[in-house]
Image 1 (cartoon, rainbow, N blue to C red):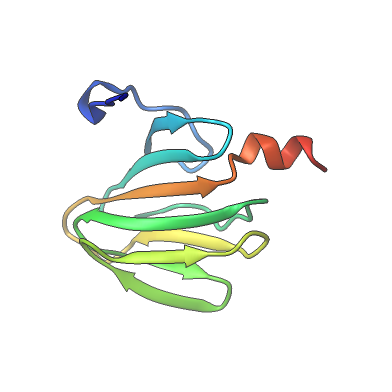
Image 2: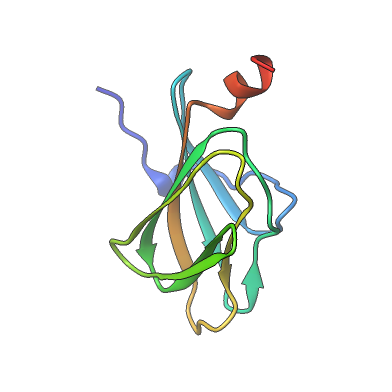
Length: 113
């Protein structure tokens, strides 16, 4: 068994300017906890792998393609590979914290091209 305590994981720099903590990396999956402050949004981007967004704290939205849905605690949103997506906290008053699960690991998808 392996255990990761999120409070002990440093934030990783990213082009979105949000708090991003890589909690897990394996050949099959990557798990990242992201915190978006009120008024912030990530850049719309496309990943070469499937992405799951799971709400942990606060509320925000997730855009997938031309659809936008609210995301709160215990809400799961699936974004298929190759489709633009963007989490945001543009109207919230508290941080929006969520788990991002990418499968397979993006590094494998990049080497398979």
